[in-house]
Length: 273
Image 1 (cartoon, one colour):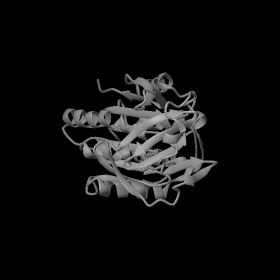
Image 2 (cartoon, helix red, strand yellow; image 1 turned 30 degrees about the vertical axis):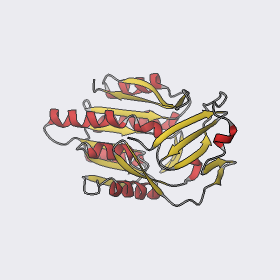
Image 3 (cartoon, one colour; image 1 turned 60 degrees about the vertical axis):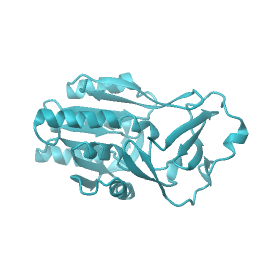
Image 4 (cartoon, helix red, strand yellow; image 1 turned 180 degrees about the vertical axis):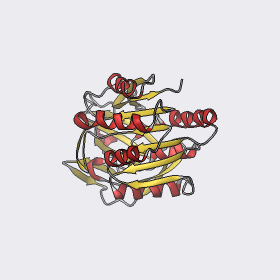
């Protein structure tokens, strides 16, 4: 049972439920007409607009349940709340991959989770039995992820919490000869860390370094993105090219109770069949 629900979307907006809280925020891909009347949209507890929270921006944190995890939500920059609902659908695949890898390897797989934000993917892997290195350049985001681990009863799981630029960390792991069985990453379009991050310029070199620390072939890879032009086909091709494993790419879709299907990025994954 998930506390996340897309109620309606359209006009560049989405109406969502995060547990008991109703939220109206941006959704550029929703370029159709909303199905619910304006009166239903007026009942929200939080609204993002004009570059900031215009309603509910000072709301205290609250906890939801999704994908078997307990996760803290609170108003954040860019209209974010700490949970990407579209990512929840990827967590069962991660859990199955971790368990299959553990059976094949005869030990807990080592998973590297990059651009790991508030920890949903990291915790899904840890809950399934992986040893996880959770890496994000934002200290507040890593602190938020640790809080989610506590809420989910996973604080004692073997998770390394690392505040560092993803590229710098991976390069250092490559120099040290460290190895990982599974790779999970959700790179942004733009970002700041050790120098500016631009996905068009920096993703391919990062994947090359990741292939070196997961070689000759990783047990599994999950690559997701929310950048225009990085659809499932392109992400799948990148995984196949750099890691030498079969990979399937597809859109990340969230369906509303009104029947709309909202695309929110894409992901590629392999090799679990």
